[in-house]
Image 1: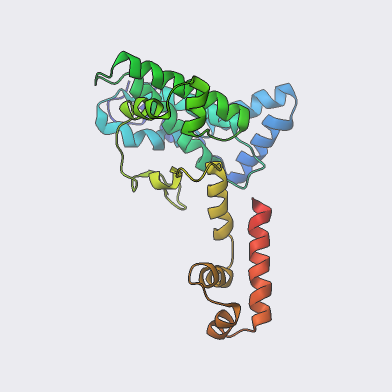
Image 2: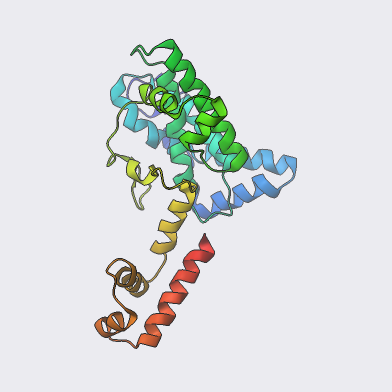
Length: 262
């Protein structure tokens, strides 16, 4: 058993020899898991899990200063990875790692919460446990995370009790804390936080960001000037030295592509 993360071996796994899948390989395996024969699904699922173990390793780094057993965290993280593989929808224009990282973190946080040495009243812990069960059930049924109001209604208790119970078992964390970086854009805690007026699936928000990132620099500039700076198409046309008709066409095309990906 390893005592520190930078050792080569953890849980008996030689981390230096772990395979890393490309995005194309991941997509192919995910489609096989959904559409293949039972044998193909089983084989693809196993390969998908083994090919993303480094994702688990990258996540548990942020928990190394807690004095927790890394072998235990790795095993718990693998459970989160399996859930991500089983529940990921390959039709969404989202990288698997973008979906998998919060699932792995969530599983580890549940484990740490259940083994927390800080004493929380039994009644609050019971409510929190039931609320998490209801949250997982409603998420699976509706394919999006429920609101606190929906959880409270399902449990038939006041919304305030649900909030208090959940907050009593969660440690504070900075909104600017990075949770994952695979060489592309860093995912921060704030990227996964919604507000009370937004009941949309967080995956759709991530898909929106990626759809915008896929636009050309000119299209991004036009949308920024139009919708964030409040400029008219004529003003935009004058500033970037093209006709108003071209601005209209580029703006419409960019918006249609974003809608298409969502």
